[in-house]
Image 1 (cartoon, rainbow, N blue to C red):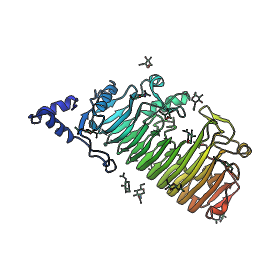
Image 2: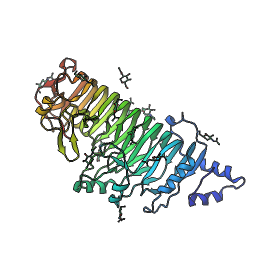
Image 3: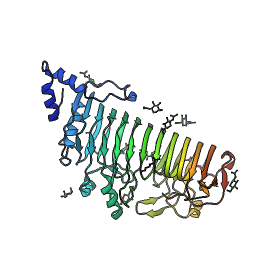
Image 4: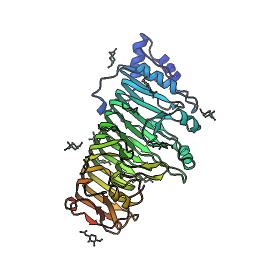
Length: 443
Ligand SMILES: *[C@@H]1O[C@H](CO)[C@@H](O)[C@H](O)[C@H]1NC(C)=O
Ligand SMILES: *[C@@H]1O[C@H](CO)[C@@H](O)[C@H](O)[C@H]1NC(C)=O
Ligand SMILES: *[C@@H]1O[C@H](CO)[C@@H](O)[C@H](O)[C@H]1NC(C)=O
Ligand SMILES: *[C@@H]1O[C@H](CO)[C@@H](O)[C@H](O)[C@H]1NC(C)=O
Ligand SMILES: *[C@@H]1O[C@H](CO)[C@@H](O)[C@H](O)[C@H]1NC(C)=O
Ligand SMILES: *[C@@H]1O[C@H](CO)[C@@H](O)[C@H](O)[C@H]1NC(C)=O
Ligand SMILES: *[C@@H]1O[C@H](CO)[C@@H](O)[C@H](O)[C@H]1NC(C)=O
Ligand SMILES: *[C@@H]1O[C@H](CO)[C@@H](O)[C@H](O)[C@H]1NC(C)=O
Ligand SMILES: *[C@@H]1O[C@H](CO)[C@@H](O)[C@H](O)[C@H]1NC(C)=O
Ligand SMILES: *[C@@H]1O[C@H](CO)[C@@H](O)[C@H](O)[C@H]1NC(C)=O
Ligand SMILES: *[C@@H]1O[C@H](CO)[C@@H](O)[C@H](O)[C@H]1NC(C)=O
Ligand SMILES: *[C@@H]1O[C@H](CO)[C@@H](O)[C@H](O)[C@H]1NC(C)=O
């Protein structure tokens, strides 16, 4: 069945030669499609086109229009979000359980922030770290592309968070339970919280994204991580640019077989494993991670692994926990250029805890093994000078196989000291280890 619904399109269709209307219309709609990106071409070609209708008035909710277009084109179709149209999404949008559909975002999807109370009651609960979202997208064989924008209007959220630390801020782009698919070329702007979560998913590629969220006042764009991966495997994140105020990419519990490459990260908190071990009843695994060719500018961290000790702590209202079990295994950082970062390398098993001694007393139950830092160079800033890295395990038994090769990180004064404790220095490739610690970076 064919669906075309925008009035502007209807007008255009009248100008098209009208012979056998359905096939003519479908042929015409096909000309409006963004070509499928290279990495989406292995999924079957889409055989119908739907155009989502928009009120385009920046206030009336278009969620139902979107749901209709996506349902009409589910199982083999291509949904166009038309160029120059703004789709306002003012109610939760459940796009899970889809199969073989392409979402071609040429226009703008915008999530209004005029009623944060509404979203407190109506967003999706992602069941991890109180994260919520405006919409959830999942199913199998779904490709999202186009040159459009997803606008989170985050400033209002960042402002309100300063007064209300319990405010549940939505993730801008939430993928939950997607098996096979891709997200590419779109722009994500002003995310209230993390830009992307990918949960309960496998075989998904993110490529060519442009993420940008910075505050225009003194209220920081807090927790605007680029990507958080949770309970997912075989995920690729590549060829993207990120400017934000938290991790560029973060591997949360049970992220396995992940490739992250060719990213330009600016203002971030680095590429981070964790935090892990926050919840005592849980077992967290992060395994088989390859991170390569990353440029890291104006960041608190470069390559970082952060796990909680085996002791409960309450660093702030939103940062409490400790005591969880698990394993970080086979993580490689290969190729990273650093400019103006606080620490280039970090391992801490003392996350969430201010007192390092407390962590040595209560060694983490989250072991770290087979971690390689290779081909990492660049410049740190004055924050921890003369120290450029912090590799501190909570006991000699909780970390093993930590390797460094061809690492040359210096402060602007040229010093290259790295705090090393409870790690085997013989495999650290000549890092200039010292016992002197200025603590891990709480950022
Ligand atoms: C359209 O594609 C779907 C999924 O690939 C397929 O099941 C369906 O048979 C196709 N329909 C037509 C008319 O080709
Ligand atoms: C979303 O829709 C799917 C499919 O219709 C349904 O199974 C699921 O329960 C819904 N999820 C939520 C959180 O509403
Ligand atoms: C905001 O949303 C709440 C909860 O849905 C509702 O009760 C209230 O009337 C809304 N306020 C405005 C100004 O729309
Ligand atoms: C992910 O899967 C788990 C286990 O099936 C389920 O309990 C959880 O609700 C799912 N997460 C989300 C965000 O739907
Ligand atoms: C969620 O938020 C509540 C209230 O702010 C807090 O007590 C709880 O610890 C948080 N849960 C998680 C899993 O972070
Ligand atoms: C990402 O960039 C690399 C290097 O430029 C290129 O080889 C690769 O094809 C790109 N990936 C995608 C999915 O476009
Ligand atoms: C490394 O990443 C940069 C983008 O930050 C890209 O321009 C370059 O082509 C990548 N190099 C390789 C070898 O893929
Ligand atoms: C980082 O982002 C700021 C805007 O917040 C911009 O002025 C600066 O040029 C960017 N730097 C790099 C290296 O991308
Ligand atoms: C992670 O995987 C382990 C092993 O399969 C499982 O025991 C644990 O419950 C998982 N944790 C989460 C958060 O899904
Ligand atoms: C380590 O992880 C990489 C990247 O996912 C993978 O290619 C490699 O096979 C893994 N090695 C081991 C020993 O598991
Ligand atoms: C962590 O290391 C300790 C000490 O070597 C060992 O007893 C424990 O089994 C390890 N735990 C995991 C999950 O590998
Ligand atoms: C290690 O750091 C000290 C203090 O900055 C410096 O004097 C020494 O030359 C460094 N050693 C190496 C091998 O870089």
